[in-house]
Image 1 (cartoon, rainbow, N blue to C red):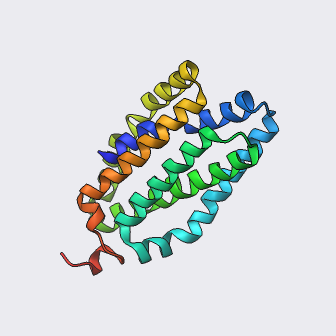
Image 2: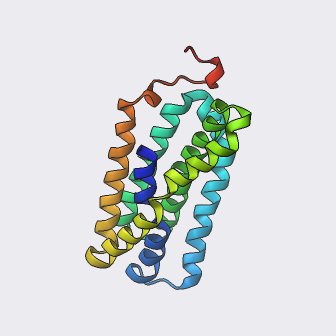
Length: 185
């Protein structure tokens, strides 16, 4: 449920990022490319760090913490007037939110699902959790057109942080470092 809500809120962030750089900050398409490249570099860095982060902190802390930090980056994105800071925030947002949390989520699902069910479980997972994404992108871009990118980023950032922190009230917050098979049942 939490991931579906987060997907709803974050699916349209690339559109907001582009609009923020081009329209609000007045930079050309080439600068948008550099900012998106910074986000991609954040994703690459995450791929090197995610296994160690999850092993050290456990699934719950990694997943919740990644979305809290990602939400904070979105909130700051709405406040920043510097394209360099926006690029760094894009890297942080994609590093923490998308890559760390996403890789942790996918890994856990593959670890706990029996091999003969993995294809069906994966298909059901993506269908269920991605279904709200396009609606969220439409809502996010409509909100940005109505109240501006700054207010929309602030609203999304606060919402993402609150939803992630709601994860502390679930079983995922009680997971311990290490692989699920190594944890106590």
